[in-house]
Length: 269
Length: 312
Image (cartoon, rainbow over all chains, first blue to last red; front, side):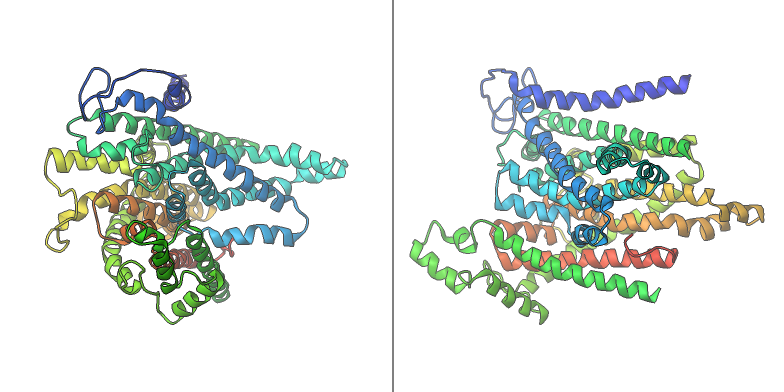
């Protein structure tokens, strides 16, 4: 009983950690504060000002869109492309299609991801779609292999055999059974993948390779204001906390999911 | 074993060929070239055009690629379009700092991760296991640049114990320069690795052969080091190869924060000035390093547990 309560409160904590930055990112830009520009690194009422004399709270409210939006967009694109490749590769009866889809990805796998992204980010400077796409492409090989492995597991099991003998349609088997079986591993992977994407996007922006150095983005804010961290710590702490809360919360949630799917897999045996 | 190694090496060669094309295409795709970047303010369009032909930038991409590839195969990485010096010199002068940084990190990470993984794995779901798991889980969720900013603020700016940049510092004279960068790089890699070793240990401990060995009265110490660890190390070694990617990203961030004149700094500079030969040279060296690490990891795994098959 006590374990269950502890479990519940852990879930509540991680959900809250994710919810705060997410809500700020979504609804923050709608809030109008009408803050007047002040002196650089002023400690004022709310969270003070940043190195350019802008209101930190106001920046915080608009800075989440790029920080989280680009990462989430990248994961969605990675799953659309990689997921389709993986599913097709796993469900095809022609071995050469499988090979043709998966082998090229093996070749791409060892390419250092931040390298690709920084080249793209610098080339198309300050273009969020380009960076999003680059982060997505870096994730495609891993996603495709993961989905393929999970789908292959399900597609080679006795259930599919039985469904086929009952003359279930191809679509019915593959979307109904295999697709559903893939959801578990995908959900577990999604948590870590989103955290990784947030990391990548934030690192690129922190390094000054992505968005312009005056952008309100959280990672850019941390980078820009770190020289004034002793004068006005909030300008660094506030955006950093937002990023950490999101990745930490998501990591905790992902860990629970991995745990759950493992327990389920053991129970099924 | 031998045929596995041959197959795996063949794959690495194919990978290398594809990567070199990719590196070229990616850099060739960048909008604007070195001639634009350097002289837009001081030169007339006419002069920029002449410079472009001087640098060979007006040739078709295919021709440029074949030139470049021919040179690379004879060990010549080309000359920088900005400084005019050989790219090889830039590689040589920047590789040292990065290598020292990476090796120092690995020298701390590997023993630490193996020890933590064994400690956690042998006490599955015990109090110590849960504590370390929570700490590593939380640590691995903090972006490295946030850790870096916090550590620099605390230990360099507030306490003044450790240097905050490498500018004007000499590594041999003051090894303290390494402490903060390595500490930043340590965080995530130790977490990722120790969790893999933990999982491997748990799997191995539950395996039949370990149960049997225990029944036969093999001493615990010998059981752990001789029977459990080799199997537990496989996911760890594979993860180590993948960690290379995380580590490289970390190195990029760390070099930027601590102003370390390493590989990543040279690369970022090269990309910003559109110095294509420099970017191509550095990227190629990095890609080769990544391939060699992956190849090495796969061969080590195959040696540890010879049943692993190629890629699938």
